[in-house]
Length: 617
Image 1 (cartoon, one colour):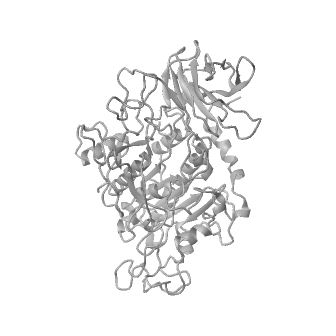
Image 2 (cartoon, one colour):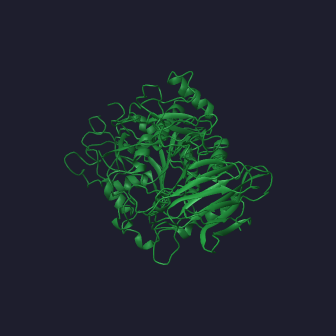
Image 3 (cartoon, rainbow, N blue to C red):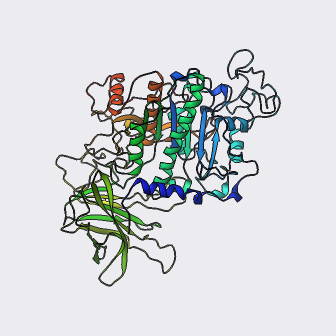
């Protein structure tokens, strides 16, 4: 029996987190021990604690030793990072699994002491206690990797980024492609740099200490999001807790200071309800409403997602059918959710008829919990889960999840599903209207997961419009059950979250400036705010930093738009601008961009980035 979703479910999951820790046999011999060391070395502390804003990044494969996250003296601006799938030497009661590093620990691993000297105690290349070169020019004599221009610093060489990652167990080829920091680029490198990357010589960087969580590989590789909520919720609790600890250390230098916090979560989910009932949205809304006495305002920034054209959303009346196309050679299960409207108490259960490509069909049962679907010959063709999600005081929503086996069986004599067009029909008497949401099941670049995305099919919803372009928002009234409105990130359904869509740096000739893939809110808007992630409709992507040094990559998507808003918001809050909520942020962006009549304000092409963005030529 599936229990109704509640915070108690989260509490139970947290108790089981230690069981997910990596094997201790993977701990490198020189792994740093867990410690309660200070957050930042003196050289990385904000010049004015009253004029700073903490930036938190929750992502995957975050290169925390990157030069864009350091100061002119080479000290880390990363106050704390939780490497959720890194092996750890010590277990701690507040870090149930993985490994935590503080900024002072990162500096020690690099070979820097908190007094601006190398770890061996000798003055590094003529630097004084403030970390500057003896002639007063910050950063002189060092290359991009923090080493002396002519070789190691006096007193011993500084460790480069790879040595630090290797010491933390993050460069182990045996973990598989995409699972560590061995690659040239990563999603986390791009997001962290856009949200909080500064040239080391820029003193503005010290006004934005960074707290980060690097998510486990398997939670990211599984695009259905089966594991992600658990780790994301734990990550949110961590960054808020560490931000409060950092705030207390800042208050020691400036009594009464309460720094604001901006949390960037450039992750998304196609399935699920977008009504704010997910535990992630509830948790983030609760924290934003009551951030506690240590912090100023707390904002959570999320992307709207990239699934407007994926045909994974539909709205059906009971008795109305929709095609569900299962691709061949799919080595992973496919799943679809059928959501009913909110109701005061569980009423008539959600039931559906499912027809296979060859015409065989079966009907789901009415029992709550887990079940199976059989065809007239008694063969099990799908597994089902019927549950009720709490969506407010006294209201629940029924959700029927249908899971079919892979179309490419993993081994002989194992269950498999025929590829082709299936059919889904909510049965009369079910709660209606019915929202259909297909789970994401494709392959993430760099991982070995062999998923292939299923999609909904309706002749009235062509892939492109008459001009050959990707279609925009749904017409009013809609002409097909398939929806492009409402294709936004299911994690971003809260009332306080800031939802950011992707725009084009060079809008089309007809004035359309939104990226054609960007997910849409229920009302057809591309988000609360947009920011460019592509130069134009024909030239996708922007140039972003890679994992190390001067490495660059061209990436695209709303995942890159969200951290641009995070960066803008952190700088505005550090400057003392009162931006308490979504409406105030929209108004400030609209005013700054001179877009008085814009329903969705756009940040415009980024400027002052410490690398070439690729959006300006």
